Length: 316
Image 1 (cartoon, rainbow, N blue to C red):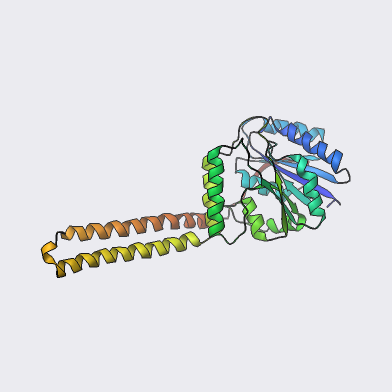
Image 2: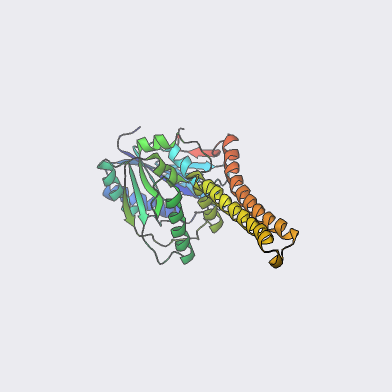
């Protein structure tokens, strides 16, 4: 491994219009502000459907510091980030998005914090008027719930824009779970970290490809991966509802014994109340448990995390 080598990992899905811009931005920052470091950029083409592959081939031919990992299909951003980190060989690895919303101008500040001994430099997003309100609200709700149910300290508004020391990268590569949240795993590892803030810029080209359905899926996986509290809560809720059902039944029976003249319940009422309560408890519990079982099933299948179609300028 080269001395003072920085690796940049950039996952890309249908980002053909942004790839040259992010490469040029990083190149400019390194030449002007950190000239004593050698560097490499690892682009992970996550099964792009546009001409991203051709653009990356051209960039890698122009500059051997530009390296490419082309995945066989779209595995999702979390997996693409993981693939890039596994291929990185630097003393430190910096992950950022291809759309330039993670400003490369902040890279020198991240490197300075790392040189002080910090093992993880996480970048925290400042509020942006360009972000849709539903995404802002959803993000706040997500991090609030996650902080309540998880023992892992995952700070609100943190992003995948972060610097990782080599020891963090090596530890990360030992984690083999399939349903993953990249930043959640990094925080779970527990290395020394510091936070810096940044103002996200609007996308230069194209539209965001990380849909709300993918965000919801990531949120659900995160809740399941980092806490068993939902299972405990549903158990407590089940006991409360079941207890309430028994109380209602006892009250109905007692009213029939103590004041039969006011009795206006049919036997069917008992059956309906009992079945509704128990059915609701069972369906809720089974739905939640099925999510955990699905996660276990995914893990025990032992499939590779990703498959690679080809690499460019990489020995691994």
